[in-house]
Image 1 (cartoon, rainbow, N blue to C red):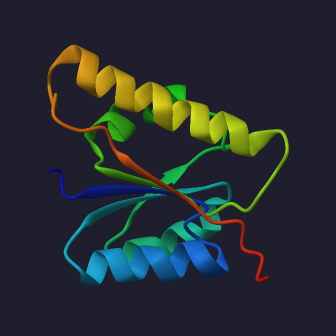
Image 2 (image 1 turned 60 degrees about the vertical axis):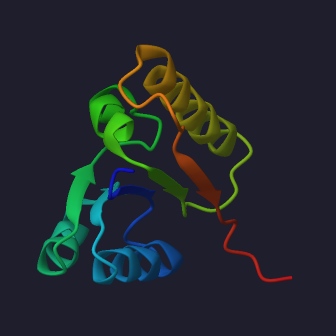
Length: 117
């Protein structure tokens, strides 16, 4: 199992907390953010920032996603974006298993809406 994690929304309240926890647990953490100013906080905590103009910018992260065993969506629910993030995670899992590189499992996908009920 890979010890890498990819987190969408890694500079947010939930995303940053999860990223810090995963890093403390020994995972290599990639954090996707939309604003470069948050890179400093991530770098200081040994989290690799991925700056994108949009969370839909999947081409730049395809190889990174394929190397991660856990993909976390901490952006919060968005009617347009959330299904695209899930679709990307599913496509990544299919690619990993179909290419035979890591045939025994697809990445774990975790979604959080950020809403307490």
